[in-house]
Image (cartoon, rainbow, N blue to C red; front, side, top):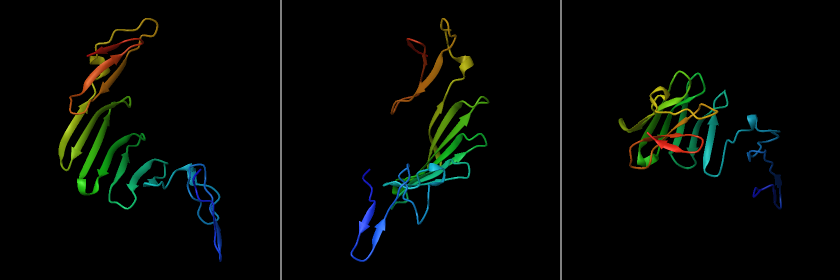
Amino acid sequence: MGQLTQHLGSVQTEHFRYDEAANLFKDRQQSALHNQVHHSDQFDYQYDGFGRMVSRCEKGSTSGQHYHYDAENRIIAVDIHQGPLGYERAEYRYDILGRRIEKRLWKASAIANTITYPPVSRMKCKPLAGWGWCLPMSTVAPNRTPRCTMRTMTTVIPL
């Protein structure tokens, strides 16, 4: 799919092979480790021993993202290096059930934005007939404050 498979030269001929994730095989390499993408046209990717992506760096630039995880394999922070545009850090917090409850965005060393998701116990929720479920959702529009809504089977109720 748009990849060079061989180069026919007057002195030497080269053959190139790729795996299912479009990784170029190195010399005599038979398969890509864990079928992970390590390079693309724009980025280089690195993974830890658990198979989690730990960095995505832009080729030919100092820009990139570094990911941090907790023992439950949940992402807890992302360091965003934007080259000359500066540095940002997003931090995430979870409740005891593993639900994301907060996101903090830091620019340089100051908090730029905090999104706190309301606990389910404080949400105004009417049980649905037959299921007894309602799903909380939180959305943030650009340059606006967070808005929480409840999505039921057929309606969206603003909180």
